[in-house]
Length: 278
Image (cartoon, rainbow, N blue to C red; front, side, top):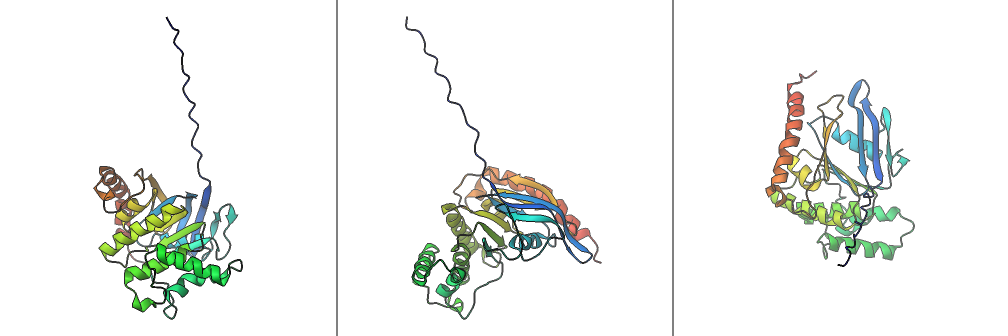
């Protein structure tokens, strides 16, 4: 009888964790005697998409501007890729809620703006990159059009190309799709996910839309009602990628996540409305 040969199981190696890209460490943001946020701690890994939600006035945008270097913390520190944030950052792509396109420049010229400050890229290389990015966002042939000649969705596509063309280490987004109608919003959310999936960067997105926060994010961070807002809880989003933002909402796990996060967020929203005005 042939002797049985025992096959040793292949050892399972622990997954390599991505390095931290953004570290918001014990950050307090104050304006005179008014303390907007207090002792906020958020770490975003390289390639991680983090959505931040919270009641109106809880300091979400203030934290985002501290990461961008537009505001200085009263206490604590912010680092990007291990380097302290001091002043406006060159490794940031910022997608604003309001339209940030220059009306007197064409779509091509608006997308090109970030590259014009790069001495290592020639004019011909800039043109090649801009044309490539306009094509990526579905605007090939629209480069000579001015913002007023584009639809709201098309202008948002130009903004996305403008923010991503410099290949930033970190992408910051402040309610980027809130001004769009629901159908255009879904299209733009899927477009963003497609572009992000190609070359994942660390993302911090501020939103009031909990559906959007879950559908786009790897993690949802809930901030407390202000003033003196801080992180209440952080929820991992274990939904497969790539995603379709409309279809993912039909997944039972999405519904469960929404219920759990809203149970946490709802109390903070109610506190913000119950707080008397001073």
